[in-house]
Structure formats: C-alpha cells, structure tokens
Amino acid sequence: MWRRRRRALRGAPDVPTLAAEHLEAGDPTGWFEPLYASARRDLDAVPWAEGAAHPYVTDWLDDPVSTPPGRRAAVVGCGLGDDAAELARRGYDVVAFDVAPSAVAWARERHRGIDVDWRVVDALEPPDELIGAFDLVLEVRTVPSLPGVVREAAMDAIGRLVAERGVLVVVTLVATSTEAADAWSGPPWVQAPSELATYRSSGLVRLAMEHPPSDPSGVLEARVTWQRPAGADPRGGPRPGGTLPLA
Ligand SMILES: C[S@@+](CC[C@H](N)C(=O)[O-])C[C@H]1O[C@@H](n2cnc3c(N)ncnc32)[C@H](O)[C@@H]1O
Image 1 (cartoon, helix red, strand yellow):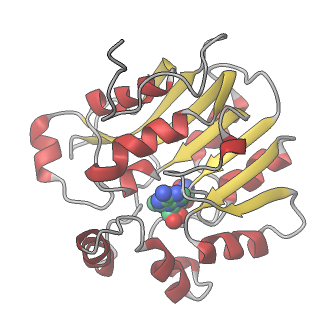
Image 2 (cartoon, protein in one colour):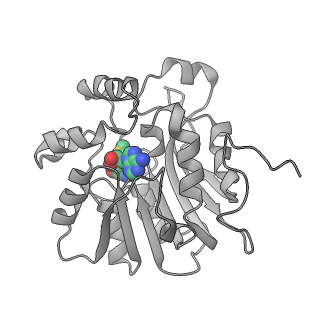
C-alpha cells in the first residue's frame, strides 16, 4: 500500500500554468475552483481524483498511531470527499471543507446519503468555531498543492483545528535530499522534513512519520501523525512570521 501511484497533479499539463497565473495574480489558491468547475463532473479531469479514500487514510483508521479521544473529525481540502465519506462510514461526525465551491458541491453529490457537513472554507482563515474543535483532523495532499508563500500559514492554521489530545494526520510529499527537491517542479510542491516542523507552531507534537523506504525520484509520499498534548491551547503561541510580545 505504500507503493500507491502518485498521480496528484503531475501529468496534467494545464495545472502548472493555471497555478502560476493565479500565484502571479496574488491568489495562490484561486486555481482550484476553475479546475473543478471545468472538469464538469469528470473524475479523469481532476488529476488527483482517485475515486476512493487514500490508502494511507484507510490504513491509519484500521490501525491508528494514536486513538483520537472522540468522534469529531475534520477533513481539510476535502476535494471530492472520499476521505470524509470514509470517516463518516466509520462513525465519525465529519466536517469536510474545501476552498473550491465546485469541489464541495460535487463531493456532496457524490456522497449523497452519507452524513457529512460539507462546507466552503479557506483553511488559511478558518472560522473561530472550528479552532480546537476536532479529535481527528485529516490533511491529505492539500499543503503540498500550495506554493511556499502560504504553506507555513496553512500548516499553522490546520494544526490549530486540533482539540486537546486530538490527532492530526498529514499526507504529503517529502524530498529526501536537496538535489531531489531542486529537481522537482510543482505543483504539487515537495516539503523538506524540516518544513514539516511548522506544525509545532500550533502546539502539536509529532508522533510518527511513515513512508516507503525509498523512491528513485528521491521524493516520497509520507504520512505524519501529530497530537495536541493535554493542556496545550490551540489558540496559544506565536503564529509563524509573527512577533513575540516584548514585555
Ligand atoms: C491536491 S487536492 C487534494 C484533494 C483531496 N484531499 C485528495 O487527496 O484527493 C488539494 C485540495 O485542497 C483544496 N485547497 C487548496 N487550498 C485550500 C485552502 N486554502 N483551504 C481549503 N481547501 C484548499 C483544493 O481545492 C483541493 O481540493
């Protein structure tokens, strides 16, 4: 299962151009909506759509690194909703959100009859009611689809959704060397293992990082599990790029 094909975004010739145009226009997440809208309900037109929950997610749910303390779950950047539907089928109360309204509408349609609270939300600016509200948060391939300028803020904001003793499961692309990172062009962009430490800014501690032993490209799809310790305030601590009070 760790050998899963890595289709996400690669091989779709229009995606790098679309992403670059929106980034230049100062709207780094703006390219998802036109991509979903122009797909017209054709899964093959969405390069990351697999039509099923990610195997790293189902595997984690079968054998969790740490059992979440309750059943409240969030799926960040839910796309077409397969991970969210899987969580709901397993008895979680799920809020699934995406920045692209067309993705949310499509996910709702695809999983009609499954009880998920589908929402249009920007993970960079989550509403207050979602902060610290979840026992389990899934972030599957969303952060690596964002350019470097917003990734730190995204990781910090996503981490703050996690309740005390709650768990965050991240699926991302990790470069095993500087050379591999330099040779890779996105989207999706790769993350250095050191960049992943940004989740600590939201008060999380890392429990596990799992990935296949190697890949000829030097880039691996990794699954990282984080937890908010008891007593760690999801609203506390400095935001990345912010300043500490002087007094
Ligand atoms: C590569 S896709 C992955 C979708 C899904 N998680 C999966 O693995 O199939 C990235 C998703 O993140 C969403 N996204 C990107 N930026 C976002 C943001 N700031 N807030 C919420 N969703 C975002 C995109 O619309 C897209 O659906």
